[in-house]
Length: 293
Ligand SMILES: NC(=O)c1ccc[n+]([C@@H]2O[C@H](COP(=O)([O-])OP(=O)(O)OC[C@H]3O[C@@H](n4cnc5c(N)ncnc54)[C@H](OP(=O)(O)O)[C@@H]3O)[C@@H](O)[C@H]2O)c1
Image 1 (cartoon, rainbow, N blue to C red):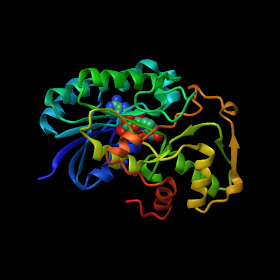
Image 2: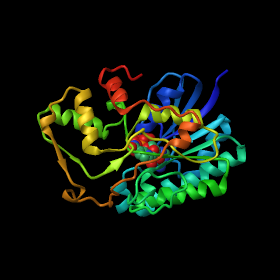
Image 3: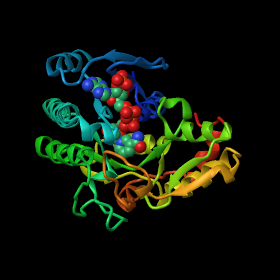
Image 4: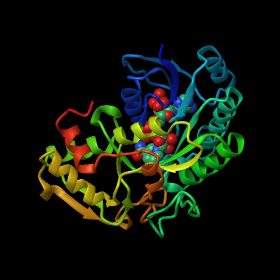
């Protein structure tokens, strides 16, 4: 019999890749808020994770062997303008889930972000000083600390900007970018924002492999890339017209949430534990060739 895994945020972008990756070895219960999904070996459950009682009842009924928490308000601009609502989901609900996993003494994986850093330095290791520029990054930073205070055996995975299956979620930036260029529209991408951009399948595999490791672990792509450099790689993989790619500065676009310059992550700790992400080029090619899953 397969072990049982609860994945929150199962209808989200990372949730999609976690479901596709985990369904081989686990029986999955995917918590969603407003959407459903239909995958083999996976049962969708609607629950607003702010409802502690309902969430606790689901966990009592399922008796999971582990929980991966990928539900969040992940839109940094939305968090900037909706601080209380996003705090309830990004921090309070996360604390509750950590407490539930501590009570059951089962592995708990919290998905955090590279945006806990201010981007002045880049190449951040797990113990580097945090200093988020945005409300979203600050909420994730508080949630990280609360998770490890409540349940020191939990895993906190700091993740980068991710790309993956274009159909995984409607707002997916790879999908937007590809369809823009295919429609002969110019696409503007920042040359001055560096991230360790990572493929969501590699990241999902990393989370599943390292589930149960204690403390903070960086899971990201092997190299740092600007969004513009990533766009060039994507254009190559999808055989798009590169001349429609336009490099622009963060300063050219007004956004509610301030953005850091370089939040690239050092992944040597994860690699020493067995994390083996594909290169961005290889992962993009699998997606473009429709052989990702
Ligand atoms: N995507 C990235 O590049 C990236 C980068 C770094 C870190 N992360 C982190 O990775 C995790 C997953 O991100 P993502 O990009 O997959 O996010 P996403 O696509 O925006 O999905 C968010 C998920 O959270 C669920 N959710 C939101 N509010 C909820 C509530 N009140 N109750 C229950 N579920 C709720 C949504 O459910 P419904 O859709 O059903 O409403 C959805 O499944 C997050 O922790 C995020 O901070 C993501």
